[in-house]
Image 1 (tube, rainbow, N blue to C red):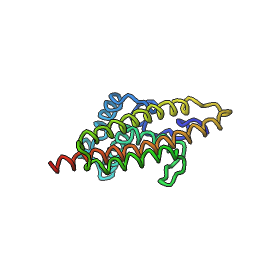
Image 2 (image 1 turned 30 degrees about the vertical axis):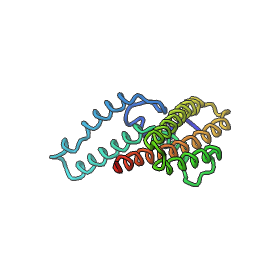
Image 3 (image 1 turned 90 degrees about the vertical axis):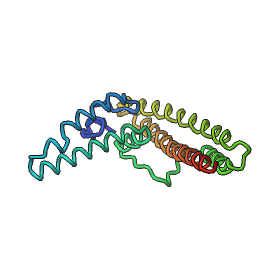
Image 4 (image 1 turned 135 degrees about the horizontal axis):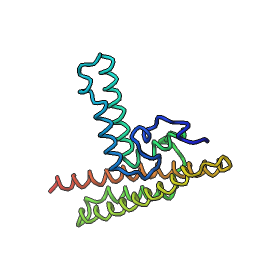
Length: 195
């Protein structure tokens, strides 16, 4: 597994002028995005040929995709894995069974929130737990990707593969947690609507 920059020189990180890493400077990312968008904005090509206008629109869309992907930690992690040719699957078996059991318990609790004497307090307890798990998983991903990206020695191929498997499992956990967080927020809206 050679260097990402060599394998993918035209990646989103390079496009937006930030280092290839999980923990990125979002302010710099946004500033670079705006500067890049100004340079390719379709309005600048109003008097250009149809081909140049079409290319401008395509470039602007590509830059928007890059920003959207890199700004979101889960999408950023998925993108980093894709640079190592790892595609996530809903049927991936690398998720810890204990984590899945914990998810089932949390979802069961969430489904019973409306039946509690203080549903908002119960929901808040679940949401605090989910947010803490998200924070822990983000820290785990940051550490794993730091190790993966700094692990460039060819003799460490087995170690990098293990780290990539762990990162894949953490990203899958993150997706579960993001969905559960969204379900909690939707439940909160449902409860508020019932008042």
